[in-house]
Image (cartoon, rainbow, N blue to C red; front, top):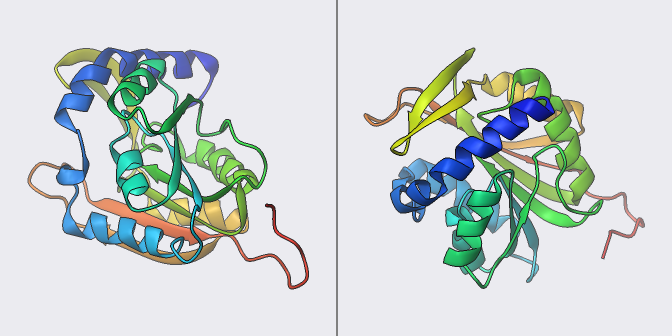
Length: 224
């Protein structure tokens, strides 16, 4: 994330790799069983009411969006990269995809029941996470849930090669406590946290944080 120049660089890099990314990661087969368990825990909390609206924030080419849609959720994918969005629309013509940033989601206040940010905060610095958490709070209805996945550690690294292309990407590692703290500052309540060891194909431990907004006070109407 960061300033407009950083965002433009990030968007351009993902425009470049969009087709290759889609071919390499067409669906959720890459995810570990523990990863899928957290995704299912997120979905399970939204199931009781049909038509729950979910934003896939940083959706890439839509592999998680289609998984959530097939689980019965009303999903809109959002990604900073127009190239990623273009591929997502072509691959999943029945779903809605829009261009937007994590800290400026194209959604009205209290418009969603859930937000999933599946490894989309990996280009955001710790200080930028506070703004993202605040944006998630704005968009979620009372009682809504957010699921955030990221690589565990500290500091940043530069990615020069990705999905067969030369790129210039800054990748950030995050402490689960720091991420949880940013969401707690915005009023989110922790629901579940999972940290697992890196698999052979991964360089760092992986974390998934499930948080929720407190429900509306009794007698207070929720957004339609």
